[in-house]
Length: 142
Image 1 (cartoon, rainbow, N blue to C red):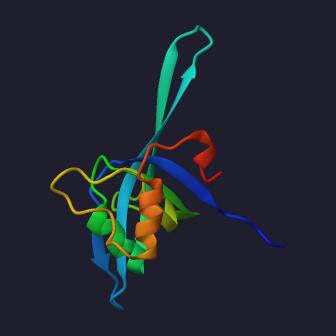
Image 2: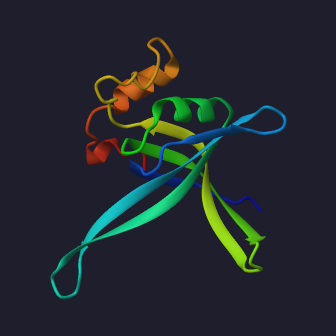
């Protein structure tokens, strides 16, 4: 049977990306992202919930994320959910979910003095230019 494992989030980068290399020399970058939703509680009070996600990108996407994303930037991440379970040094079982990114779009423009999100003339540059402005509901990818 065919399955589906797809996650899409839009939010703010919460930590500067960290890039490292596997023993084979493949780049891998990880960073945290926060997404928020606002709702009205049963007593009429406006509240906001924030969810935190760990995002992992590989190869060329890892290099782009490391180069152009910084804490506070807004981004769209699309990928699959992966779970890890391990035993910590204290003997406790630990659990973590992470998003393995297939696609990352930079949704805001780089602050003054920071390089642009992509080099001109690349396919990613066209996507970044389209996504740079404020998003309208009909422009959301889902």
